[in-house]
Image (cartoon, rainbow, N blue to C red; front, side):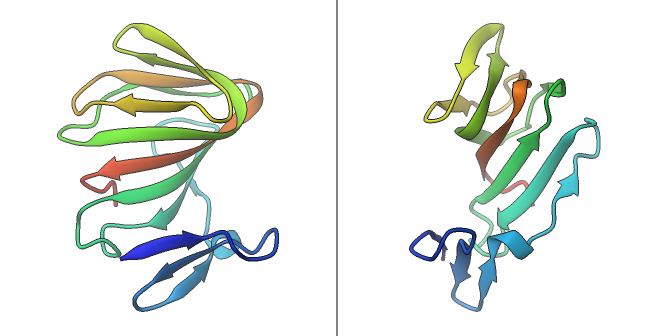
Length: 130
């Protein structure tokens, strides 16, 4: 089991697992393999959860987007942390701003478009993305 510990000084957020404690700021940003201007930071992986789920920071830079795609057999949840933009889910537009959560059912086409200030999401996948 893992948890994100936010009870530490600013800039010191950690992910605590049974085996280790990782500082979020030390985790690498990985470029998305298909969409330019999109980066993922793997906070909690399937290895941490017995293959049940994963959590990721997703950064979408201004003027960039995560194009139309679907996750076969995976539910994805977006929690907007900062910035603004929009999600197109099965043809319906959802404005994204801090505090908004979007739920992408498995196998459902969606896309995310960043606004002028970019977008930072906490994305949860079940089963895990990685």
